[in-house]
Length: 195
Image (cartoon, rainbow, N blue to C red; front, side, top):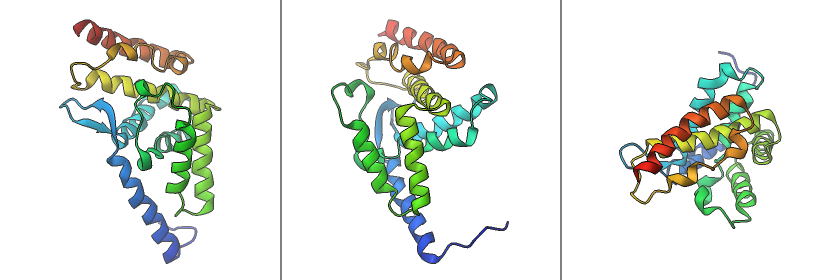
């Protein structure tokens, strides 16, 4: 395999430093639990979001798949610094988005300016839901979270009812996401009734 240009040692070292710093996302725990009762990490959520996009890509030919996957990988990366705020606790948190963007910019510092700008532009597009790809990632991000909530071995006081309205403004915007949401909501309603 031929590369366009070999990276110099400093550039390569900086890229490695970024990857090493991004490892922190594996340690950030979310409010969701795995099927065996362990708290899910943000990195695990991001992985399954990317997998969900790949599984549905053939039904979303209007999207730029590479851009969509990049956006999915980047969307929660800023949480590597200050952690995740569960959706149910976000009401009244006015600076979450600004803080997460600032943290992402800090995390990206070792990378070349071109990559920093690309990643920040993808994150901004996601945050502002300003493209079809961003809207898809927003919707599927919410759906992956709901799927995990329904699969997880959650504490007895877990608020499944919250899930029935969470993210609907995104999942209702596309027939595929709405159809998937309907299936997920059926599982959620069974959890609500079982409490």
